[in-house]
Image (cartoon, one colour):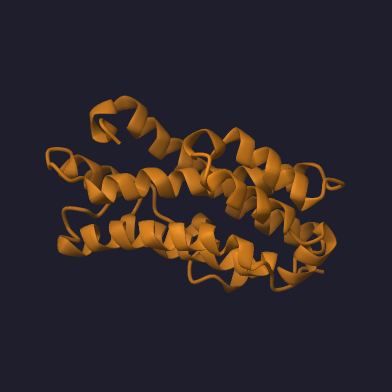
Length: 199
């Protein structure tokens, strides 16, 4: 029987983010706040650094969005509108936020795919594949500590109420929608290297 999982309690699931005309900025930010809170379920203050980083980047994007909600209605429009400015604060915020989301998504995807793998391994392998190359020698040990502080797999899944196959399907749909958004935003950055020149 399906339970009320963590993914039922978020203000907005990634599955409910409108991507028909580009990624809806406001809905994306709402859904991403759910990722930040998910780190609470990992139960370690070591993840505070990840949460603070994500929150800071969400704030940069939201500030830009609120300055003109109509012009910045999608992430794609927001990036295009900021492209000619000297300080592209929201663009840099989105770039780093996507890196953090990619790290989280890859760790959770590993965890769902290999149900014997402990979270410490899932998150460490994901870190090595995503964020590590962007981090300097001072930041890497902080993240290394956070990976070691991951709870046992069983405890984490109980905490987010993902127990039955139906629960895993809900989590997997949320994750799939997040992965699709990450891919589409990464494609925009790849197509427009000028957006992140000098970052």
